[in-house]
Image 1 (cartoon, rainbow, N blue to C red):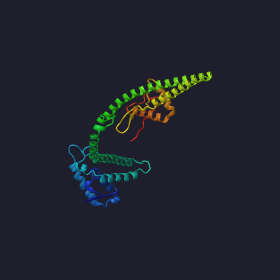
Image 2: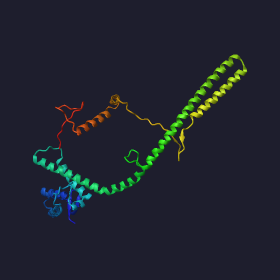
Image 3: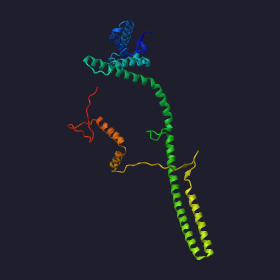
Image 4: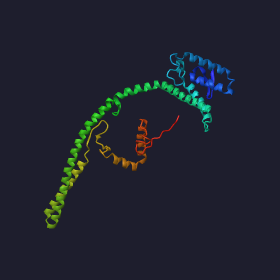
Length: 318
């Protein structure tokens, strides 16, 4: 098997995509110290001619990341070859990206060429990643779809049937248990009033009886105190009642859920509050809104930003 000696080890030339082979050949030919690798040069040239001959004639081959790479190039998109290709480009990039500024147009052109080759290599790697992962994604999606029919959460566009049934039954129980809770609260109110009334009557009777020296009156007051104590026990019993429904494994009761809801017309007050208590989060939120506006096309008007407190700055980058 004809091999290309890459920076990361030997690579079978017949597995190399067209652009990788072209870059490898150009790299050897540019370096005078590598001109002795005549066999590899010949094999690479032969492989390149073969791939170019097989390229579609109705549209020129676009190289790495092209929409219509040759069929054999697609089949040869193996990780080892792609990895070696990217490693070779990265090794070359390190030679250029050494902290020194560009000093000539020729160097700028070389760096531009290398940058686009890296971008194309990234596209090729991503295409290969998608292709390699596709069977796994399809298998995982089949499993997900099968279960989602039943257990997809309610927040999904198509909730699962079991999730919807659980929610529906929960709604029924919520109405019923809230009814029981209201009835319990009414019983608590009545029991508390009865207890307080019995206590007050017993205390008044005891005070009055002690002052008269009437033993029968004192005994009657004690009876009222006993009655007040029983009323207190009755109140405690009502308070300890559990509002719930029996479940398969545990009882089902009401639980508290606290939610925040903005009052209409008072959002500014909330924003002011959070600007003081959580300024960094508010700044991040405002930055997101400003970025979205700029991305949507908002631009300065006569040099002035239409967004109060936000500068819209043009930067020129590659």
